[in-house]
Length: 562
Image 1: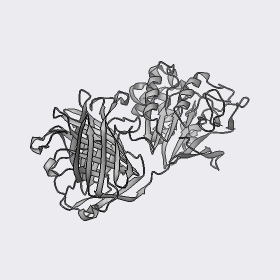
Image 2 (image 1 turned 30 degrees about the vertical axis):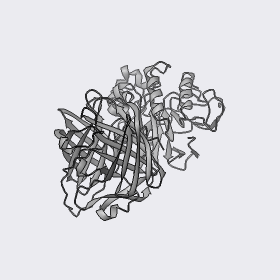
Image 3 (image 1 turned 45 degrees about the horizontal axis):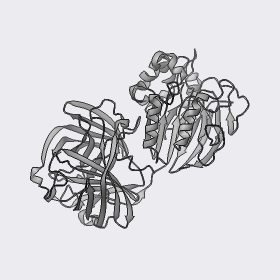
Image 4 (image 1 turned 180 degrees about the horizontal axis):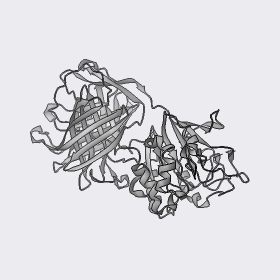
């Protein structure tokens, strides 16, 4: 499980006391209660939204940053306007400092600053569209899972007292209305976002990863975060900073009552808290047994769309595209997506009619053929935001408890390069990820006769190894090859080594093998195919699926080594 310290960047909660009561409609809709953030195509870790969902009303708290990069939160009462669609007015709130004794709710002010709309595609994904101070943006959001997900449903007030899962919106009641805490409870961890005010009365949010230390008791460090402004066209998570400012402990006396004790910058206080109900006798109860993080499948291949003069429907890319299933959550392309020059026309006429059928699920990486067109214009124009920000060709994202890093092997990977600086920061932030997959077109190890090993990739391989990355996926050589876990110097390392897969069998003309390298465990070049992973909690299976049907040619399973 990833450390929730990393997620001290993806959630906010703020309570406004004048939420309207809701009327039941008799229609049972999905419950979207939880922590949401912008994940693919690149994790915008550093901001997020907490959703408290009761009946036909969502109370959302958006934790983000103001124009100066300071912590800033907005809240919204969003009413259901259609199935899966909730809209409302975004409110900025100011009030007495968190340390004020007593906290005077009469000094809390609320001002509308814009509007927001949630459009949920399913229970775990959707979009957040907003207009704030004239700035308009739409963000793809996913429900953040850092542990077993609770099942949430409507409940009567009396039933909340017996709850053992504390996920909800909590406050100190109307006597201190204007501040609160949002608790995202998964397994034995609670991710806390406390929305309150600084000494200047301006919005301030703090976060904490509170772990269970006794029955009903959770404790952790409080973190203050700064980052790019909410309106940043390209939110850069590397500019997010986190500073420990204190500690927090939650002690629950029942499922509906407890205390919030904290020390912040030398100020120690304790507050009685209870769940916030939007209606007089109704709320959302999240309960055990939990819905565990489910496994999901990912397909990978590189060196794909080579049509020449033939119709795309007769190409190898069409045959490998047929292997991608509707239930494959993601499709990773490993470079050289369109031959021979990566032009816009080749993407339009060869790649799009084949692999374009599942474009929205593709997380691409560039290869050398992409750059035979100046600046990789065909590649970046085709994939747009899916290829990461600023046409740099590298990005990262999270999905289902796994961390994915897509790198630009054609770009500068020298130790002092911008890409390697970014990679170091990304690896540091994801250092507690259970399992991480890296993608780069050139393989550090390769038994193929056409290209062989890319020795310039060995320093990169070492960086990934040192950070505990599980596997590296590459293309370039038009073969399938699997290596045992190893170090960058080519010595076996079954305990901590990186497993290299080469999957250059996406549809381009195949290559021959040379003498097999040490630790090469499987090789195949008799036909095209794709590599399918089933990624679970702490483990993975792989199956190389050939065109034409039939059983997997190569398969296996392993545990993640951290």
